Length: 116
Image 1: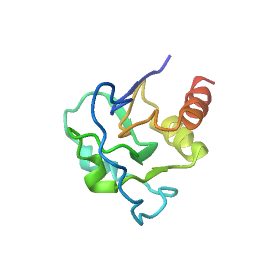
Image 2: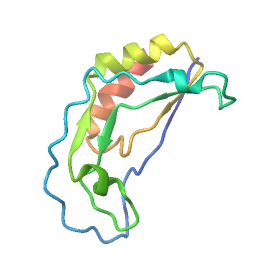
Image 3: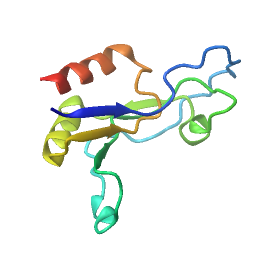
C-alpha cells in the first residue's frame, strides 16, 4: 500500500485574487528528469518527491507562485509521472505541485492512474 500526499494551494477562499497575469513563455515539462543524486546520504523523510505540474492561474496576495511562473499551468504527461512513481519504489509519495487541483479533470486522471 502506497500513501500519497499532495502539497500546494488547492483554492483560495475568502481572499481577493489579483487579476491573472499574462501567460509566461515557459517550456513544457515533458521529459524533465529530476536529479535525485542531491539527496544521497542525506537523512530526509523516506518519501519520494514527485512533481506533476507547476504554476497556478490565480495571483493570491500571499503566494509567490505567480511571480515565478505567471498565470501559466504546465503539467507533465500522465504516463511519465506514473512511471516515475513506480520506479521510485517508495511506500510514500509526496506530490509537490503548486496547485494540483487547478485542473480538476487532470488531477482526477492522475489520482485514478495512481490508484491502479
